Length: 64
Image 1 (cartoon, rainbow, N blue to C red):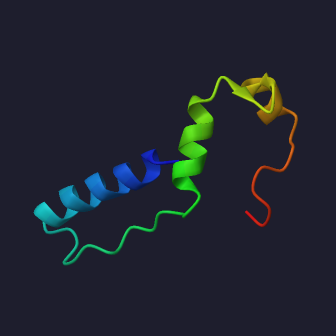
Image 2 (image 1 turned 30 degrees about the horizontal axis):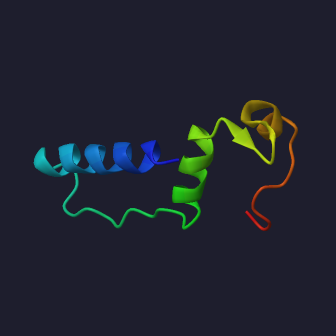
Image 3 (image 1 turned 120 degrees about the vertical axis):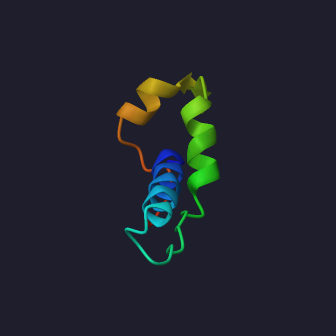
C-alpha cells in the first residue's frame, strides 16, 4: 500500500529534476494505509492464519 506513494514521489522527483514537469503534485495516501500495512505483516487475524483469512475474501474495511 505504501509502495505506490513512494514510487510516485521518486518518479516525480526525477521528472522535476529533468524538467519534464514544472511542479510536483500532492501525493494521496489513503487513511487506511497504515492499517493495511499492519495487516500485511500479521501472522494471524481473528485466530486464523492471516493468509487464509485474507484469501477468504472477508470484508476488512467497510466502504473501501
